[in-house]
Length: 433
Ligand code: FES
Ligand SMILES: [Fe+2]
Image (cartoon, rainbow, N blue to C red):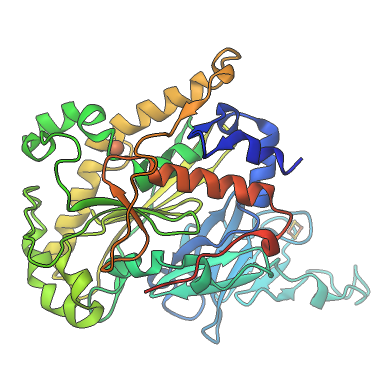
């Protein structure tokens, strides 16, 4: 059963069977093999900075409570009462020393222990072993510079090994400045009738769509100039296959090259002003580049320098729930933080200029996969195959910014993990920088 996934993704030919976007059977397997085993983003330390802080999220379809217990330790628990299975917490975020289930009142502390059972003496005759009925906890939890990840799988490699070279690029999002980053208030959430992989694929590797999909919104906003360049005429723009299924869209400013970013983004002044600090913290190569701006960490965590952290939560093969957070440098001035939040809302989110364009395409790509006839024809990810290159300056496999190297990396990782019986059979690319 599991090896069938390898037949659906043929990287040599550069084709993918569309059933991976619509099959119920593959979806169930995905929840187990991909979301049940990979490291998944569960939040940011700024959401749970104080003892007894909590924030709700999901790992796949599993409702999760991220908590910081009274001693300061982070936990990721299944948000489920161990009695009948009621949600133990309905709030998105807050601070509470314990969670009382609204059904019969079992009460759990922020370290997961079952600390209260109504009728423990009179109804259970003190025979219930409360130590065995605490909250179900993730197999591993760890942070990378403020971003908190968890996996159900105790045998998964360490988070650092899992991230590999993607961490080098992620530093440009989370480690630019002293004090790191924080999430601004709240989460933007919406449901979309599209397979989650379309979002992950697009943000981690698809510059090809930009002038076409976003042509009208870019024109309306009056900054069409930067998108009118002929395809692949900007050698400093690259796609990076960072290994382990992680893919990045970025800019690569070599020594002597100038940063010719004409995007006119209002935050450019800020990023220029912090370059000396970035150089001191992250070195020359990363301070010189424009931005390694958009990426997908396999499977469903996307970041966008614009400034967004996003999760593509699966909700069945033909539906996803998008969760989008605004992430900013803690040390940035408030005015800049406000501006970045506004920029993000203008572009992304259910009513964002560019987001609406994207969503419409992903909906249709998912809908057509329902067609019996469409399933007879494979999806094409052949662009730029064999034209990848390496650089001494930055890690990973580089390709032109309009190529499908990153799609091949993403879908082949998906197939590998879907086919492997355990982590022992899944390769890990080491971190090289
Ligand atoms: S379901 Fe939670 S106490 Fe019964
Ligand atoms: Fe887009």
